[in-house]
Length: 228
Length: 327
Image (tube, rainbow over all chains, first blue to last red; front, side, top):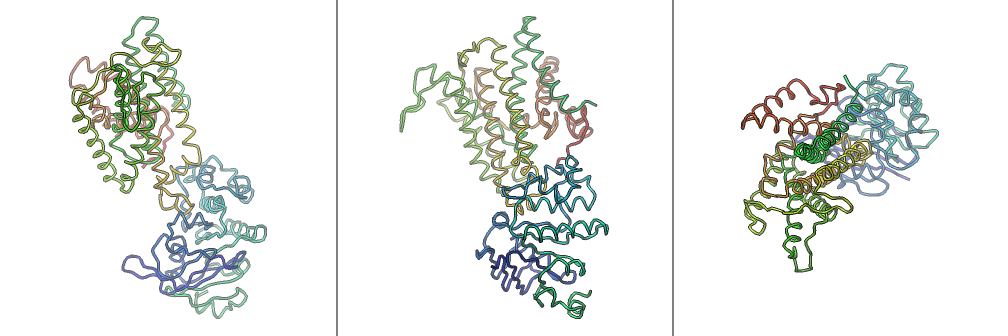
Protein backbone atom coordinates (compact mmCIF):
# COMPACT_ATOMS: atom_id res chain seq x y z
CA UNK A 1 0.00 0.00 0.00
CA UNK A 2 1.33 3.44 -0.99
CA UNK A 3 2.02 5.54 2.08
CA UNK A 4 3.32 8.73 0.48
CA UNK A 5 2.69 9.91 -3.04
CA UNK A 6 3.78 13.10 -4.76
CA UNK A 7 2.43 13.82 -8.24
CA UNK A 8 3.45 16.73 -10.43
CA UNK A 9 4.68 18.68 -7.45
CA UNK A 10 6.13 22.13 -8.03
CA UNK A 11 7.41 24.57 -5.42
CA UNK A 12 9.13 27.94 -5.24
CA UNK A 13 11.10 30.08 -2.84
CA UNK A 14 9.47 33.41 -3.58
CA UNK A 15 9.94 34.02 -7.28
CA UNK A 16 12.66 31.38 -7.57
CA UNK A 17 11.23 28.05 -8.68
CA UNK A 18 12.93 25.07 -7.05
CA UNK A 19 10.72 22.11 -7.97
CA UNK A 20 9.11 21.71 -11.39
CA UNK A 21 7.69 18.24 -11.59
CA UNK A 22 8.48 15.90 -8.73
CA UNK A 23 6.83 12.50 -8.70
CA UNK A 24 7.52 9.85 -6.14
CA UNK A 25 5.75 7.12 -4.24
CA UNK A 26 6.79 5.15 -1.17
CA UNK A 27 4.94 2.07 -0.06
CA UNK A 28 4.58 0.96 3.53
CA UNK A 29 7.71 -0.84 4.71
CA UNK A 30 9.85 0.44 1.85
CA UNK A 31 13.13 2.29 2.20
CA UNK A 32 13.60 4.78 -0.59
CA UNK A 33 16.68 6.74 -1.55
CA UNK A 34 16.02 10.26 -2.77
CA UNK A 35 19.04 11.12 -4.85
CA UNK A 36 20.44 13.84 -7.04
CA UNK A 37 23.31 16.25 -7.31
CA UNK A 38 23.53 19.27 -5.01
CA UNK A 39 20.80 21.84 -5.59
CA UNK A 40 18.51 19.50 -7.53
CA UNK A 41 15.62 19.80 -5.08
CA UNK A 42 16.02 16.93 -2.60
CA UNK A 43 15.75 19.01 0.56
CA UNK A 44 13.05 21.18 -1.01
CA UNK A 45 11.07 18.01 -1.69
CA UNK A 46 11.39 17.11 2.00
CA UNK A 47 10.21 20.59 2.99
CA UNK A 48 7.31 20.18 0.60
CA UNK A 49 6.30 16.86 2.16
CA UNK A 50 6.38 18.49 5.61
CA UNK A 51 4.50 21.50 4.22
CA UNK A 52 7.28 23.84 5.26
CA UNK A 53 6.98 25.56 1.89
CA UNK A 54 3.97 26.06 -0.35
CA UNK A 55 3.66 23.70 -3.29
CA UNK A 56 1.29 22.82 -6.10
CA UNK A 57 0.44 19.34 -7.32
CA UNK A 58 -0.90 16.33 -5.47
CA UNK A 59 0.52 15.28 -2.14
CA UNK A 60 -1.11 12.35 -0.40
CA UNK A 61 -0.17 10.52 2.78
CA UNK A 62 -1.96 7.28 3.53
CA UNK A 63 -4.48 8.20 0.84
CA UNK A 64 -5.20 11.57 2.45
CA UNK A 65 -4.61 14.87 0.68
CA UNK A 66 -1.98 16.75 2.72
CA UNK A 67 -1.50 19.67 0.36
CA UNK A 68 -3.62 22.01 2.49
CA UNK A 69 -2.43 20.87 5.90
CA UNK A 70 -0.12 22.77 8.23
CA UNK A 71 3.32 21.38 9.00
CA UNK A 72 2.35 20.11 12.45
CA UNK A 73 -0.74 18.40 11.06
CA UNK A 74 1.34 16.45 8.52
CA UNK A 75 3.75 15.47 11.28
CA UNK A 76 0.82 14.31 13.41
CA UNK A 77 -0.30 12.01 10.61
CA UNK A 78 2.99 10.21 11.07
CA UNK A 79 5.80 11.90 9.15
CA UNK A 80 8.98 12.16 11.22
CA UNK A 81 11.79 14.39 10.00
CA UNK A 82 15.49 14.24 10.72
CA UNK A 83 16.46 17.63 9.33
CA UNK A 84 19.60 18.51 7.47
CA UNK A 85 22.12 19.95 9.94
CA UNK A 86 20.56 18.05 12.93
CA UNK A 87 19.05 21.17 14.50
CA UNK A 88 18.69 19.79 18.00
CA UNK A 89 17.35 22.12 20.67
CA UNK A 90 20.67 23.44 21.95
CA UNK A 91 19.47 24.53 25.41
CA UNK A 92 17.81 21.22 26.24
CA UNK A 93 19.52 18.09 27.49
CA UNK A 94 19.49 14.86 25.49
CA UNK A 95 16.57 13.46 27.51
CA UNK A 96 14.69 16.76 27.31
CA UNK A 97 15.14 16.90 23.53
CA UNK A 98 13.62 13.44 23.30
CA UNK A 99 10.74 14.12 25.71
CA UNK A 100 9.86 17.39 23.98
CA UNK A 101 9.06 15.47 20.80
CA UNK A 102 7.46 12.41 22.40
CA UNK A 103 4.13 11.02 21.29
CA UNK A 104 2.62 7.75 22.45
CA UNK A 105 3.66 4.61 20.63
CA UNK A 106 6.26 1.87 20.66
CA UNK A 107 9.18 4.32 20.50
CA UNK A 108 10.01 5.66 23.92
CA UNK A 109 13.15 6.78 25.78
CA UNK A 110 14.22 3.22 26.57
CA UNK A 111 13.89 2.04 23.00
CA UNK A 112 15.66 5.05 21.52
CA UNK A 113 18.58 4.71 23.93
CA UNK A 114 18.70 1.01 23.12
CA UNK A 115 19.14 1.94 19.47
CA UNK A 116 21.73 4.61 20.35
CA UNK A 117 23.45 3.67 23.62
CA UNK A 118 25.63 6.80 23.32
CA UNK A 119 22.53 8.89 24.04
CA UNK A 120 22.03 7.09 27.35
CA UNK A 121 25.60 7.96 28.32
CA UNK A 122 24.97 11.62 27.50
CA UNK A 123 21.39 11.85 28.77
CA UNK A 124 21.92 14.92 31.02
CA UNK A 125 24.25 16.71 28.65
CA UNK A 126 22.96 19.70 26.73
CA UNK A 127 22.58 19.19 22.99
CA UNK A 128 25.02 21.96 22.09
CA UNK A 129 27.81 20.17 23.96
CA UNK A 130 27.42 16.91 21.99
CA UNK A 131 29.66 15.88 19.11
CA UNK A 132 28.26 16.05 15.59
CA UNK A 133 27.64 12.31 15.53
CA UNK A 134 25.87 12.33 18.87
CA UNK A 135 23.74 15.25 17.74
CA UNK A 136 22.80 13.26 14.65
CA UNK A 137 21.82 10.27 16.78
CA UNK A 138 19.77 12.62 18.94
CA UNK A 139 18.07 14.07 15.86
CA UNK A 140 17.13 10.56 14.69
CA UNK A 141 16.04 9.55 18.18
CA UNK A 142 13.95 12.69 18.48
CA UNK A 143 12.18 11.92 15.20
CA UNK A 144 11.57 8.33 16.36
CA UNK A 145 10.04 9.62 19.61
CA UNK A 146 7.20 11.05 17.49
CA UNK A 147 6.44 7.43 16.55
CA UNK A 148 6.34 8.13 12.82
CA UNK A 149 4.96 5.89 10.11
CA UNK A 150 7.38 7.49 7.66
CA UNK A 151 10.86 8.59 8.68
CA UNK A 152 12.59 11.14 6.47
CA UNK A 153 16.36 11.40 6.89
CA UNK A 154 17.84 14.45 5.20
CA UNK A 155 21.63 14.07 4.85
CA UNK A 156 21.86 12.14 8.10
CA UNK A 157 25.52 11.17 7.70
CA UNK A 158 26.85 14.38 6.19
CA UNK A 159 30.12 15.62 7.69
CA UNK A 160 30.49 12.76 10.18
CA UNK A 161 33.50 10.60 10.94
CA UNK A 162 33.48 7.21 9.13
CA UNK A 163 32.98 5.25 12.34
CA UNK A 164 29.93 7.37 13.29
CA UNK A 165 28.55 7.14 9.77
CA UNK A 166 28.75 3.39 10.11
CA UNK A 167 26.82 3.51 13.38
CA UNK A 168 24.10 5.61 11.76
CA UNK A 169 23.81 3.28 8.77
CA UNK A 170 23.66 0.28 11.10
CA UNK A 171 20.82 1.97 12.98
CA UNK A 172 18.94 2.66 9.74
CA UNK A 173 19.38 -0.97 8.66
CA UNK A 174 18.18 -2.05 12.10
CA UNK A 175 15.09 0.14 11.78
CA UNK A 176 14.33 -1.48 8.45
CA UNK A 177 14.91 -5.07 9.48
CA UNK A 178 13.48 -4.98 13.01
CA UNK A 179 10.57 -2.58 12.67
CA UNK A 180 9.78 -2.52 8.95
CA UNK A 181 9.64 1.26 9.14
CA UNK A 182 9.02 3.21 5.95
CA UNK A 183 12.00 5.48 5.34
CA UNK A 184 13.12 8.09 2.83
CA UNK A 185 16.87 8.62 2.89
CA UNK A 186 18.72 11.48 1.29
CA UNK A 187 22.42 10.77 1.11
CA UNK A 188 25.36 10.67 -1.24
CA UNK A 189 26.91 7.39 -0.10
CA UNK A 190 26.04 5.06 -2.94
CA UNK A 191 27.40 1.91 -1.31
CA UNK A 192 25.44 2.36 1.92
CA UNK A 193 22.26 3.41 0.12
CA UNK A 194 22.47 0.31 -2.09
CA UNK A 195 22.77 -1.90 0.97
CA UNK A 196 19.74 -0.43 2.76
CA UNK A 197 17.31 0.94 0.16
CA UNK A 198 14.70 -0.95 -1.82
CA UNK A 199 14.14 1.72 -4.41
CA UNK A 200 15.43 5.08 -5.55
CA UNK A 201 14.11 8.30 -7.02
CA UNK A 202 16.53 10.65 -8.72
CA UNK A 203 15.90 14.36 -9.10
CA UNK A 204 17.50 16.65 -11.63
CA UNK A 205 16.76 20.36 -11.81
CA UNK A 206 13.62 19.94 -9.72
CA UNK A 207 12.21 17.07 -11.75
CA UNK A 208 11.99 13.35 -11.19
CA UNK A 209 14.19 11.85 -13.90
CA UNK A 210 14.52 8.27 -12.75
CA UNK A 211 12.68 5.97 -10.39
CA UNK A 212 13.00 2.26 -9.91
CA UNK A 213 14.33 -0.56 -7.80
CA UNK A 214 17.73 0.00 -6.23
CA UNK A 215 18.99 -3.10 -8.00
CA UNK A 216 18.12 -1.50 -11.35
CA UNK A 217 20.23 1.56 -10.62
CA UNK A 218 23.23 0.78 -12.75
CA UNK A 219 26.60 2.55 -12.42
CA UNK A 220 25.93 4.16 -15.81
CA UNK A 221 22.65 5.71 -14.63
CA UNK A 222 24.09 6.87 -11.33
CA UNK A 223 27.15 8.32 -13.08
CA UNK A 224 25.00 10.18 -15.57
CA UNK A 225 22.37 11.49 -13.16
CA UNK A 226 24.15 11.75 -9.82
CA UNK A 227 27.77 11.97 -10.83
CA UNK A 228 28.94 9.06 -8.65
CA UNK B 1 29.07 29.95 43.54
CA UNK B 2 26.00 28.38 45.13
CA UNK B 3 24.03 25.70 43.30
CA UNK B 4 20.79 27.19 41.99
CA UNK B 5 18.64 24.63 43.83
CA UNK B 6 20.37 25.53 47.12
CA UNK B 7 19.97 29.22 46.38
CA UNK B 8 16.26 28.71 45.69
CA UNK B 9 15.82 26.96 49.03
CA UNK B 10 17.77 29.73 50.77
CA UNK B 11 15.62 32.44 49.15
CA UNK B 12 12.40 30.77 50.29
CA UNK B 13 13.75 30.19 53.82
CA UNK B 14 14.83 33.86 54.12
CA UNK B 15 11.49 35.00 52.75
CA UNK B 16 9.80 33.02 55.51
CA UNK B 17 12.32 33.91 58.23
CA UNK B 18 12.03 37.70 57.93
CA UNK B 19 8.29 37.95 58.75
CA UNK B 20 8.69 35.32 61.48
CA UNK B 21 11.42 37.50 63.00
CA UNK B 22 9.03 40.46 62.65
CA UNK B 23 6.33 38.59 64.58
CA UNK B 24 8.64 38.05 67.55
CA UNK B 25 9.87 41.65 67.42
CA UNK B 26 6.42 43.13 66.93
CA UNK B 27 7.15 44.68 63.53
CA UNK B 28 3.86 44.32 61.61
CA UNK B 29 5.02 46.68 58.86
CA UNK B 30 7.88 44.34 57.99
CA UNK B 31 5.33 41.55 57.59
CA UNK B 32 3.31 43.76 55.25
CA UNK B 33 6.45 44.51 53.24
CA UNK B 34 7.27 40.80 53.03
CA UNK B 35 3.69 40.06 51.93
CA UNK B 36 3.99 42.75 49.25
CA UNK B 37 7.22 41.16 48.03
CA UNK B 38 5.62 37.70 47.96
CA UNK B 39 2.63 38.94 45.96
CA UNK B 40 4.85 40.81 43.49
CA UNK B 41 6.96 37.67 43.22
CA UNK B 42 3.83 35.63 42.47
CA UNK B 43 2.87 38.03 39.67
CA UNK B 44 6.39 37.80 38.26
CA UNK B 45 6.50 33.99 38.53
CA UNK B 46 3.33 34.11 36.44
CA UNK B 47 4.93 36.32 33.80
CA UNK B 48 8.07 34.17 33.88
CA UNK B 49 6.03 31.21 32.58
CA UNK B 50 5.28 33.20 29.42
CA UNK B 51 8.55 35.12 29.24
CA UNK B 52 11.07 32.63 30.53
CA UNK B 53 9.67 29.43 29.08
CA UNK B 54 7.79 30.72 26.06
CA UNK B 55 9.91 33.76 25.17
CA UNK B 56 6.77 35.91 25.15
CA UNK B 57 7.79 39.45 26.10
CA UNK B 58 4.40 40.57 27.35
CA UNK B 59 4.32 44.24 28.23
CA UNK B 60 0.69 44.02 29.25
CA UNK B 61 0.63 41.62 32.17
CA UNK B 62 -0.83 44.36 34.33
CA UNK B 63 -4.09 43.47 32.54
CA UNK B 64 -4.25 40.22 34.49
CA UNK B 65 -2.95 41.81 37.68
CA UNK B 66 -5.69 44.44 37.38
CA UNK B 67 -8.40 41.93 36.49
CA UNK B 68 -7.50 39.92 39.58
CA UNK B 69 -7.54 43.08 41.65
CA UNK B 70 -10.88 44.25 40.34
CA UNK B 71 -12.37 40.75 40.73
CA UNK B 72 -11.51 41.02 44.41
CA UNK B 73 -12.63 44.67 44.64
CA UNK B 74 -15.96 44.19 42.89
CA UNK B 75 -17.00 41.05 44.79
CA UNK B 76 -15.88 42.41 48.17
CA UNK B 77 -17.50 45.79 47.46
CA UNK B 78 -20.86 44.15 46.74
CA UNK B 79 -20.51 41.94 49.78
CA UNK B 80 -19.92 44.91 52.06
CA UNK B 81 -22.77 46.93 50.54
CA UNK B 82 -25.11 43.91 50.48
CA UNK B 83 -25.87 44.42 46.79
CA UNK B 84 -25.66 41.82 44.02
CA UNK B 85 -22.85 41.98 41.47
CA UNK B 86 -25.46 41.36 38.78
CA UNK B 87 -29.10 40.30 38.60
CA UNK B 88 -29.64 39.74 34.88
CA UNK B 89 -29.45 37.22 33.26
CA UNK B 90 -28.73 35.48 36.57
CA UNK B 91 -28.10 36.57 40.10
CA UNK B 92 -24.50 36.82 41.28
CA UNK B 93 -23.97 37.91 44.87
CA UNK B 94 -20.86 39.56 46.26
CA UNK B 95 -18.60 37.52 48.53
CA UNK B 96 -15.84 37.95 51.09
CA UNK B 97 -14.60 34.41 50.62
CA UNK B 98 -10.99 34.43 49.42
CA UNK B 99 -11.12 31.04 47.65
CA UNK B 100 -14.21 32.11 45.67
CA UNK B 101 -12.64 35.46 44.78
CA UNK B 102 -9.40 33.73 43.74
CA UNK B 103 -11.37 31.38 41.52
CA UNK B 104 -13.17 34.31 39.88
CA UNK B 105 -9.87 36.17 39.48
CA UNK B 106 -8.18 33.17 37.89
CA UNK B 107 -11.05 32.30 35.56
CA UNK B 108 -11.52 35.89 34.35
CA UNK B 109 -7.77 36.42 33.96
CA UNK B 110 -7.48 33.13 32.09
CA UNK B 111 -10.32 34.07 29.79
CA UNK B 112 -8.78 37.50 29.16
CA UNK B 113 -5.43 35.81 28.45
CA UNK B 114 -7.14 33.51 25.97
CA UNK B 115 -8.66 36.43 24.06
CA UNK B 116 -5.54 38.62 24.22
CA UNK B 117 -3.31 35.66 23.38
CA UNK B 118 -5.40 34.64 20.37
CA UNK B 119 -4.93 38.10 18.88
CA UNK B 120 -1.42 38.92 20.15
CA UNK B 121 0.18 35.62 19.19
CA UNK B 122 -0.55 36.32 15.55
CA UNK B 123 2.35 38.74 15.89
CA UNK B 124 5.89 38.39 17.23
CA UNK B 125 8.80 40.47 18.45
CA UNK B 126 8.20 44.18 18.90
CA UNK B 127 4.64 43.89 17.55
CA UNK B 128 3.79 41.39 20.28
CA UNK B 129 5.21 43.77 22.90
CA UNK B 130 3.18 46.66 21.48
CA UNK B 131 -0.10 44.78 21.14
CA UNK B 132 0.08 43.49 24.72
CA UNK B 133 0.88 47.04 25.87
CA UNK B 134 -2.13 48.28 23.89
CA UNK B 135 -4.43 45.80 25.66
CA UNK B 136 -3.04 46.98 28.99
CA UNK B 137 -3.75 50.60 28.15
CA UNK B 138 -7.27 49.73 26.92
CA UNK B 139 -8.11 48.15 30.27
CA UNK B 140 -6.39 50.99 32.14
CA UNK B 141 -8.55 53.65 30.50
CA UNK B 142 -11.62 51.46 30.80
CA UNK B 143 -11.10 51.21 34.56
CA UNK B 144 -10.61 54.98 34.79
CA UNK B 145 -13.94 55.53 33.12
CA UNK B 146 -15.73 52.83 35.14
CA UNK B 147 -17.49 55.16 37.57
CA UNK B 148 -19.50 52.34 39.20
CA UNK B 149 -16.30 51.07 40.79
CA UNK B 150 -14.66 54.37 41.65
CA UNK B 151 -13.25 55.32 38.27
CA UNK B 152 -9.92 57.06 38.63
CA UNK B 153 -10.18 57.13 42.44
CA UNK B 154 -10.38 53.37 42.72
CA UNK B 155 -12.33 51.32 45.21
CA UNK B 156 -11.71 50.91 48.92
CA UNK B 157 -12.60 47.72 50.74
CA UNK B 158 -13.11 48.12 54.47
CA UNK B 159 -12.65 44.56 55.61
CA UNK B 160 -10.18 41.88 54.65
CA UNK B 161 -11.70 38.89 52.93
CA UNK B 162 -12.08 35.60 54.73
CA UNK B 163 -10.25 32.33 54.47
CA UNK B 164 -11.82 29.28 56.16
CA UNK B 165 -10.23 28.65 59.56
CA UNK B 166 -7.74 31.54 59.37
CA UNK B 167 -7.96 35.02 60.86
CA UNK B 168 -6.77 36.94 57.82
CA UNK B 169 -6.64 40.24 59.73
CA UNK B 170 -3.53 38.99 61.52
CA UNK B 171 -0.70 40.08 59.16
CA UNK B 172 1.37 36.90 59.56
CA UNK B 173 -1.66 34.76 58.69
CA UNK B 174 -2.25 36.64 55.47
CA UNK B 175 1.48 36.42 54.72
CA UNK B 176 1.32 32.66 55.29
CA UNK B 177 -1.55 32.30 52.81
CA UNK B 178 0.36 34.28 50.16
CA UNK B 179 3.62 32.43 50.87
CA UNK B 180 2.00 28.99 50.57
CA UNK B 181 0.41 30.02 47.27
CA UNK B 182 3.78 31.30 46.03
CA UNK B 183 5.50 28.03 46.97
CA UNK B 184 2.79 25.99 45.24
CA UNK B 185 3.07 28.09 42.08
CA UNK B 186 6.89 27.85 42.10
CA UNK B 187 6.53 24.07 42.42
CA UNK B 188 4.01 24.06 39.58
CA UNK B 189 6.42 26.15 37.51
CA UNK B 190 9.27 23.71 38.19
CA UNK B 191 7.11 20.73 37.21
CA UNK B 192 5.80 22.57 34.16
CA UNK B 193 9.32 23.41 32.93
CA UNK B 194 10.31 19.73 32.97
CA UNK B 195 7.00 18.39 31.63
CA UNK B 196 6.64 17.45 27.94
CA UNK B 197 4.58 20.63 27.53
CA UNK B 198 7.24 22.82 29.14
CA UNK B 199 10.04 21.23 27.13
CA UNK B 200 8.10 21.57 23.89
CA UNK B 201 7.38 25.20 24.77
CA UNK B 202 11.08 25.78 25.42
CA UNK B 203 11.86 24.13 22.09
CA UNK B 204 9.22 26.29 20.37
CA UNK B 205 10.91 29.37 21.81
CA UNK B 206 14.19 28.26 20.25
CA UNK B 207 12.95 27.18 16.81
CA UNK B 208 9.19 27.34 16.22
CA UNK B 209 9.30 25.78 12.76
CA UNK B 210 11.30 22.78 13.94
CA UNK B 211 8.72 22.04 16.63
CA UNK B 212 6.05 21.86 13.97
CA UNK B 213 7.83 18.94 12.36
CA UNK B 214 7.15 16.97 15.56
CA UNK B 215 3.42 17.55 15.24
CA UNK B 216 3.30 20.41 17.73
CA UNK B 217 1.63 23.73 17.02
CA UNK B 218 3.92 26.42 18.51
CA UNK B 219 1.13 28.99 18.61
CA UNK B 220 -1.05 26.66 20.66
CA UNK B 221 1.83 25.91 23.03
CA UNK B 222 2.49 29.62 23.52
CA UNK B 223 -1.20 30.37 23.95
CA UNK B 224 -1.51 27.79 26.72
CA UNK B 225 1.59 29.23 28.42
CA UNK B 226 0.14 32.73 28.11
CA UNK B 227 -3.13 31.59 29.70
CA UNK B 228 -1.39 29.83 32.62
CA UNK B 229 0.77 32.91 33.03
CA UNK B 230 -2.28 35.19 33.05
CA UNK B 231 -4.09 33.01 35.59
CA UNK B 232 -1.16 33.17 38.03
CA UNK B 233 -0.73 36.94 37.62
CA UNK B 234 -4.50 37.38 38.07
CA UNK B 235 -4.34 35.48 41.35
CA UNK B 236 -1.50 37.76 42.46
CA UNK B 237 -3.67 40.75 41.60
CA UNK B 238 -6.49 39.49 43.83
CA UNK B 239 -4.05 39.01 46.72
CA UNK B 240 -2.51 42.45 46.15
CA UNK B 241 -5.96 44.08 46.32
CA UNK B 242 -6.66 42.14 49.50
CA UNK B 243 -3.36 43.25 51.03
CA UNK B 244 -4.07 46.93 50.34
CA UNK B 245 -7.85 46.62 50.67
CA UNK B 246 -7.90 48.92 47.71
CA UNK B 247 -8.00 48.63 43.95
CA UNK B 248 -7.38 51.36 41.43
CA UNK B 249 -6.59 51.73 37.72
CA UNK B 250 -2.87 51.85 38.51
CA UNK B 251 -3.03 48.06 38.77
CA UNK B 252 -3.67 48.10 34.99
CA UNK B 253 -1.00 50.70 34.20
CA UNK B 254 1.94 50.10 31.88
CA UNK B 255 4.23 50.98 34.78
CA UNK B 256 2.85 47.95 36.62
CA UNK B 257 3.55 45.75 33.57
CA UNK B 258 7.05 47.19 33.46
CA UNK B 259 7.64 46.55 37.15
CA UNK B 260 6.58 42.90 36.84
CA UNK B 261 9.05 42.55 33.99
CA UNK B 262 11.77 44.32 35.99
CA UNK B 263 11.35 41.76 38.81
CA UNK B 264 12.16 39.00 36.33
CA UNK B 265 15.06 40.77 34.63
CA UNK B 266 16.59 41.70 37.99
CA UNK B 267 16.26 38.19 39.38
CA UNK B 268 16.96 36.24 36.19
CA UNK B 269 14.82 35.34 33.19
CA UNK B 270 13.75 31.68 33.15
CA UNK B 271 15.28 31.12 36.60
CA UNK B 272 12.88 29.38 38.96
CA UNK B 273 13.34 31.83 41.84
CA UNK B 274 14.57 34.74 39.71
CA UNK B 275 11.24 36.57 39.96
CA UNK B 276 11.24 36.16 43.76
CA UNK B 277 14.76 37.56 44.11
CA UNK B 278 13.82 40.40 41.76
CA UNK B 279 10.60 41.25 43.61
CA UNK B 280 12.29 41.16 47.02
CA UNK B 281 15.13 43.38 45.74
CA UNK B 282 12.59 45.80 44.30
CA UNK B 283 10.56 46.02 47.51
CA UNK B 284 13.71 46.47 49.59
CA UNK B 285 14.96 49.26 47.32
CA UNK B 286 11.51 50.84 47.34
CA UNK B 287 11.44 50.76 51.14
CA UNK B 288 15.00 51.74 52.02
CA UNK B 289 15.86 54.10 49.16
CA UNK B 290 12.29 55.40 48.91
CA UNK B 291 12.72 56.67 52.47
CA UNK B 292 15.80 58.62 51.45
CA UNK B 293 14.65 60.07 48.17
CA UNK B 294 11.52 60.38 46.03
CA UNK B 295 13.74 59.67 43.06
CA UNK B 296 14.83 56.21 44.18
CA UNK B 297 13.93 54.83 40.74
CA UNK B 298 17.21 56.35 39.52
CA UNK B 299 19.06 53.83 41.68
CA UNK B 300 16.77 51.04 40.51
CA UNK B 301 17.55 52.02 36.92
CA UNK B 302 21.28 51.95 37.64
CA UNK B 303 21.00 48.51 39.25
CA UNK B 304 18.96 47.24 36.31
CA UNK B 305 21.61 48.52 33.90
CA UNK B 306 24.38 46.80 35.85
CA UNK B 307 22.44 43.53 35.98
CA UNK B 308 21.57 43.60 32.27
CA UNK B 309 25.14 44.49 31.25
CA UNK B 310 27.16 42.34 33.62
CA UNK B 311 24.89 39.58 34.95
CA UNK B 312 23.18 37.84 32.09
CA UNK B 313 21.31 35.43 34.30
CA UNK B 314 20.16 38.21 36.62
CA UNK B 315 21.02 38.24 40.32
CA UNK B 316 20.37 34.48 40.54
CA UNK B 317 22.75 33.90 37.64
CA UNK B 318 25.33 36.13 39.28
CA UNK B 319 25.24 34.09 42.47
CA UNK B 320 24.70 30.58 41.14
CA UNK B 321 26.36 30.78 37.72
CA UNK B 322 25.49 28.06 35.20
CA UNK B 323 24.11 30.10 32.39
CA UNK B 324 20.67 29.37 31.08
CA UNK B 325 20.84 30.34 27.44
CA UNK B 326 17.94 32.56 26.62
CA UNK B 327 17.20 34.59 23.54
